[in-house]
Amino acid sequence: MIDVRELTRSYGAHRAVDGISFTTRPGRVTGFLGPNGAGKSTAMRMIIGLTAPTSGTATIGGVAYQDIVNPGRHVGVLLDAGAQHDGRTGREILTIGAQTMRLPRSRVDEMLATVSLSDEEAHRRFRDYSLGMKQRLGIAHALLGDPAVLILDEPANGLDPAGIRWMRDLLKGYARRGGTVLLSSHLLHEVELVADDLVLIGRGRIVAQGDLASLGSGDGRGAALVTAQDNDALAAALAREGLRSEPEGTGLRVHAGTADVGRVAAEHRLVLTDLRSGAQGLEDLFLELTASTQREAPSTTDGHATTSTTKGAPR
Amino acid sequence: MSTGPTSATAASTPSGSAGTTATLPRLDSSGTPAVGLSTLVPVELRKAVDTRAGRWLVAAILALTAAAVALVVAVSDDGERTMADLLSFAATPQGLLLPVLGILLVTGEWSQRTALVTFALTPSRSQVVSAKLLAALLLALAAVVGAILAAATATAVSGTEDGFADVGVTTILLFAALQLLNVVMGVAFGLLLLRTPTAISVFFILPAVSSILFTTVPALADLAPWLDIQTAQMPLANGDFSLTGEQLGQVAVTGLLWVGLPLLAGWWRATRAEVK
Ligand SMILES: Nc1ncnc2c1ncn2[C@@H]1O[C@H](COP(=O)(O)OP(=O)(O)OP(=O)(O)O)[C@@H](O)[C@H]1O
Ligand SMILES: [Mg+2]
Image (cartoon, rainbow over all chains, first blue to last red):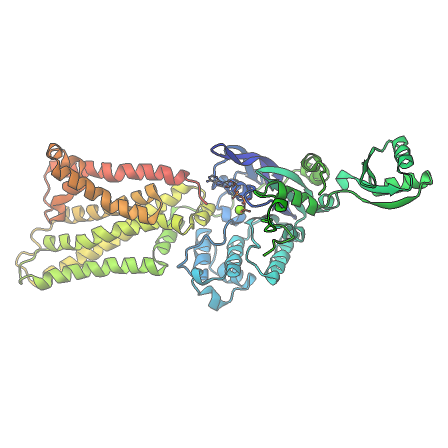
């Protein structure tokens, strides 16, 4: 549904988004994952026309966002849950949205119920909302027009574990009904649980993309770590089967799946002492990405790592 | 830490893009009810008064207008004040507050960052700006009507002989035009500067500085009525609504300079500025 091609945005000499291309499909949640400052928000702003691209295009269902009639009815957007008028009540914020999209007022009540904001809470002023309530209100706003596409920038920010679970179920259900979701996050574990597809971005460039399962298992980058009693014999046997290998640690790294390596060893009656997948997991991939885009590498600091990964930073 | 060729291998993995060759559904929005000015103007009017600050501002404009008129009548001797007189007093609080209303209508979107939502729902920013301009004009018009009613009532109550003699259609029109011009100037400065404190300060300081400059530098004195908006509008502010053709021309020229030009520039800026 969302089709991004060679999208680029420069600020002076700095390329915040650097020629990214990806596609999201209906019925699937696409996670847009990258460390702080990777360019996620900038890319999303370009998709909905709030920031002009330096070059490249973004279309939704083949149409530029600006050309969609009454876009709120087709694309639900939440770029920043905090970007609402402090003095308006939650209900008023939704009412303005509904009025702008020419929706019946009843939609407001429906959406308030969907995101579990009580009537009393809906009458509070936005400035008195907790972070989680703001996020829920933002989701309600994005869903108002019953859109087929959702674009959400860090929607789980500020949600407690129950809230994150709620959001996850909501988005999964939405996608199951055929909706297209693009959601950004800088937390792998947050995205892992909800996304079907993943687009990894770092320093404005796409570093990896694909469906979660294949990215996670590293199937596409088949690699096995193996240690045999006689490594040289194993290497020779592998080479005869056309499988490349090189020494690593106490054994070999083989450019093949673990099953292939096991089969070769069995056929050549070689004793293995260790055999496991040497593919990079998603977390390794992401950590590496995060580390290489860190201002300070975690290892060079005095323990106050500034990572924002699943490991969590020390106090 | 592993040193695998992360990006190169992973990015070229074909597994994830298996489905992208299938044609994606197209989005057809032709049957969706369109969002036009008839939708957006009421929305902007609503936004102008749906916060405590907005309601206070509108209430203050109405209350101060009435208060100004009432005060003048109270402190004047019976039969001393004519309607044109009273109108010019009503114009003072309106002249100060209506532009602020216009400014806030625009800058509120940026300072409260609601522009993010507004422009996401209405990508045609010119349409949003038009709606704001129309909403500001409608609000100003309401205030003008209120002022006229207040002045008329006060004139009748104070029992001035021939109190209505000096008000004709021209007077009413000039008074209304002046207030509307003022509110548009507020919108224009809002669009141009996009930040509430900056827009409000510049709106009040710049014309004052210009006025001081034009009245104190002798070489500029001749040009003043043509270039300085306060000089040009001086007669109107003093309750003299019978302008000569030349004076009208001066009001028009300074209007273009101080309202038209900033409006154009502001329109250009606001429809292009990055929203975040
Ligand atoms: N108006 C601007 N002028 C200059 N640089 C900008 C501007 N907007 C964004 N950038 C830069 O572009 C880069 C990408 O920013 P962006 O907000 O898109 O990152 P992000 O992936 O959303 O990060 P986060 O996870 O922290 O929200 C950053 O380095 C940022 O400083
Ligand atoms: Mg961001």
